[in-house]
Length: 231
Image (cartoon, one colour):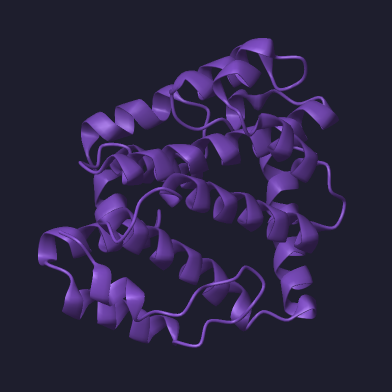
């Protein structure tokens, strides 16, 4: 299905600027204009690791066995379940988006561990090629990793930023850039709609966040990270 009229009627989104259409209204518009089979991808992109279906999976005996075979925290393992669900989506764009975020988060986590001399095994999520390479060789001077992850250099540069709020903004900039690259030569397809939703979600996340609030949030995130890697 093509989405000429839907996309043509939407404002262009720019990173760092507010969207004119309230985020909740955008979701309602997509639900009205998209067939249920396509809008299901929006629902999948909205999922979080503490959603009811992910929490329910944790009650399954087989999933519990998998969890206990890892050294991950329950929260990280739920994140792994969510990303695995996304990487099984029928739509290639959706599978690649979830895997991109898996790789992004794993490299950021491994970089922190590497700088402070901790074992990345406790924070690396998933079992794709990038995750396996990170477990074996870490981030630094990992030629095999650089070969399979073109964004590696940019992700490492972001991980080294001292200001947590600026770092988070640059992480979202990497996501924004990835979305633009994936849809550059596509026009009015569902992938363009999904990318628009994800970019609008990025803008929405920052709309109501003041610098002071952001610093409080990221101080809390850093405290959790320090606890997880036993600083």
